[in-house]
Length: 304
Image (cartoon, rainbow, N blue to C red; front, side):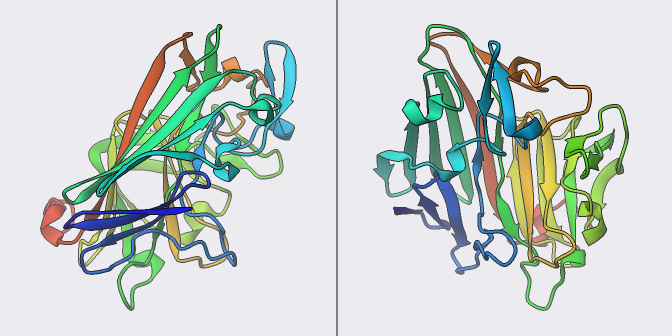
């Protein structure tokens, strides 16, 4: 079931399957969200829960018991219930079931609210523990954005601009092992800008386990137009597109968690950036997406 919300600036469409954002357009009708072309990637904005990335051999250990769990968890293929809706907001809810408990033993409520606020789309996540014991989880977002967005532009005409000066390294991924290589350094980021190239993604996602910024923009070098993603409650970030295909999209992925790392056990409680939630408690997280329609929205000293 598709639900449309709109205000004077933006129109968003959300699919109740996975509570997935499938369209975000500005008032000119320009589309910012990847449109699920199965030739490259048949999703566009999955919600990652209760794990982020792939578990080793698609299994996780919880309290001594082993559970099979698909990459990025089970939410992306599940039907969420629409619980509230206004002209410019809508909320979806997923609760535990016999099915989810075959993969993840706790009782929980997971909600995702989409709310249009002027020129931004705000995403509000809430994880609530309905169990009698503390639960552990990872959570992440995975929105894919059209790239290029400009007519006659190409992927390499774009760059990523962080809000702060960074001095950090991406964690390399070993495709043979299917794991990130703990303690090793990949792409080095010094400053605020990453010029896009296909080769950045030849091994997998470009994943930064340590990042200071809580906002990043995907922008066209010359026009300065693009999209800004804010992620105040997520501790890490990754970027991904398929390789070597020249797919016209880039995912910007705020994460609390990641795929398996070398040296990391199979227990969920030992996953990096895992969150603990006490019985009866809840965690709230937010993310925002804002189309950038003017060069003046990017600081002039960043884009000359």
